[in-house]
Amino acid sequence: SLVDKANYRHFMAKEIHEQPEVVGHTLARYVDMATERVLLPVKLPFDFKNIQRINITACGTASYAGFVAKYWFERFARVPVEVDVASEFRYREAPLRKGDLAIFISQSGETADTLAALRYAKDQGVHTVAVVNVPTSTIARESETVLQTLAGPEIGVASTKAFTCQLMVLANLAIAAGKARGELSDEDETKLVHGLVEIPRLMAAALTTELQIEKLAREIAKSRDVLYLGRGTSFPLALEGALKLKEISYIHAEGYAAGELKHGPIALIDETMPVVVIAPYDRVFEKTVSNMQEVAARGGNIILMTDAKGAEEATIESLVTIVMPDMAAAFTPMVYAVPVQLLAYHTAVVMGTDVDQPRNLAKSVTVE
Ligand code: G6P
Image (cartoon, rainbow, N blue to C red):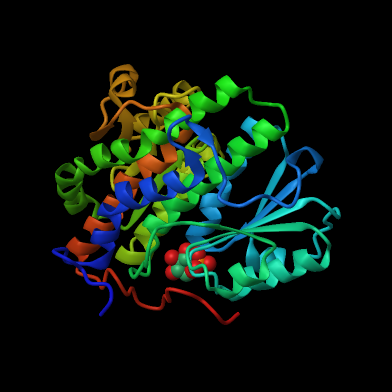
């Protein structure tokens, strides 16, 4: 076949490992590397200054990329963003303002619900941008503007490299929006883009946690439920972590906003349910640590994904700390996606499931 597993046991493993390279390709398509400024490969048919609200719509993993992007657009460009799963958006008759922007994210570009949502948005007279991996797809053809991810063919049903490439495209689009709206200076832009330029190298560094995660996966495989917690952009990544684990290992997992723990899931905490805490040392780190203390106080076992500074500051005994490289706080989801994906992958391998083709799931859902 055109695409093979090279020396990997599964496509998913290959695709996780390809990320520094394909995210780097995607980056190179969206920035001018010499000046470290955003340079979109297409001219947008609208001005971000005139956009009052952005609607982001997608399914599955792509919707979590959109959810991360919401934080970026709101922070860099001060534009309100709504994120929906396509199956809800398409039927709820959401009022859209003519001339506003709707973004659709899809690896395949063929997901039926996302396509229907795109058609609905077009009928409402909003501008449409599709972030897609397959440029010949229906969603790419039908949207006003296409921003391609350069992940290359993704074979594993559970999305990995498409997700991080979607994040790379969306980060650049959010910076472009911030510039156009006068919320970011040239200096802010170069600083942010410089943070993006570092990502491929940091993802490669994140891959070196694999042996540790493989060991950890043997413990996770014994659990019935796993909880993932995060705040800020780590919250959507917690949702993605839980989805990945469910999809391929069939272990029940839930992602939660760390601050919501006390409003429900804390009731479930005991020594049998591992809690994965995604907490880079960013401006919400202290808050997340206090949620982690609540878990520890109830005998919960914590797996902490953080950086050296976070590991030093986190005062609780955690079961395992996965130390990630230091990096610009804004873009941590792209790098922390790596250990999150590896944990799901290795747990599934321990469980002996069909990693690349999990039961009941399809790579692309073209029927409703
Ligand atoms: C399926 C796949 C997921 C994917 C989702 C959206 O459920 O199993 O991995 O995230 O579809 O697919 P899309 O091609 O639109 O990104």
